[in-house]
Length: 211
Image: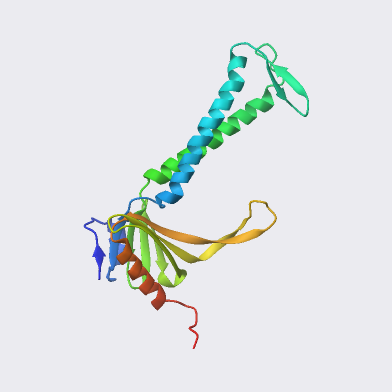
């Protein structure tokens, strides 16, 4: 069974696929599943609002000409518009807090609105075209660990790859391996696409079979 959406593919993508049989052709609604991007967006909103409230409460009296007090090197110091000698540290902290909030929020919005590009599945490989760039991945590069969510009208599929990277744990005492994933998000017929992917991954599995 082939799943071919009524899409006009870029010439570059058509040339890359060539004469290979197209088993599915879809356009992803997002770069990543919403369940991964919405928490990032909400964290950005919460951080921005929370730090904004704290920053306003801290700086408003200062801007109104009043003295503000804060801890600097275990010593309580004051600052005002007339005495700004101690204001560097809280100013730097304020700027960093704002940049973190705005950065996370912008990143979350980007993942929410940015489309994931076109995906073409052939018997030999999975091809992704996004932002004028083509990525071609042989089916043997996937582990076969597949996660599907959503429904036939709109769903997401996560394909785990054999590649990955080592990252530090939250307590910085050790490292753990985190595999790479390919996400096909916000597309229809997701369960049929999963069947095609699983079939091709199994057929191209490079690991030796047990007898």
